[in-house]
Length: 290
Image (tube, rainbow, N blue to C red; front, side, top):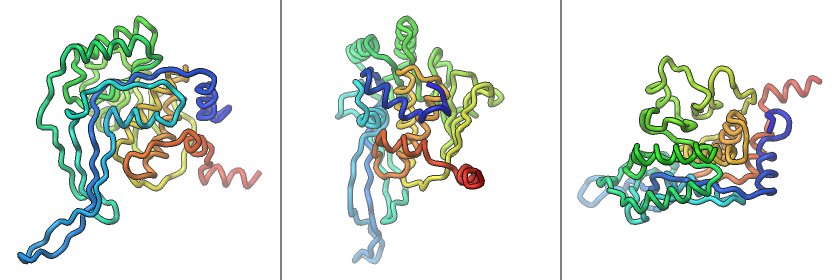
């Protein structure tokens, strides 16, 4: 699995074709609700919001699972039963611009121990584990410690999509965005077990393990859930033995494809391959002068 040799996404497709592995996704699922509205004049001489279209999609851990649905892998998710999922409602105008968001997560559910026990059984047969943590109550610090300990005994990669302090995820590969890293990582120095995502810019690892590939710009359609997509593909690549920086490169291309479509649409493996094969303007210019 060597970056810059063969397209990394093609390598992953080949590996998945030869052997099916299991990715366990544990954490907080939710529903992303998209409500398209327009403003009309009301007979009471005020403005009223009129609903034109409502779309519901999986969010959180369920979105991470959905992002792996196009791969021929055995993946499984363990979260709250569906009726207990929080809902994040986004109101959009006709152009798809988010006007405001309303979160319905008024109750922090107390999770029965049987749910955690069932999740630990999944960890026992997983080739990689993703902790999709939105801090809604399912992933308690004690449960995370159990999962990490079990993964360590089995030699299983354990990845945490972080929302809380890094101490909670001790022993995991940490995936955090810039805000999280700058808040929690002293002096902004990353360890080899941290991947910092930076939106459209390529992710950053520690100074001694950098990603050399460059990417061209893409048109942003939807940023919601891009972190779930990145984390899911990071876990998938690590399950197949890719180096962390190569797994992060694949995950970044997956996220780039993801943000070009609305409503949490999962990227196709073939689209990730094409994204990794695209040349930047600088590369195209250099090639033209050869």
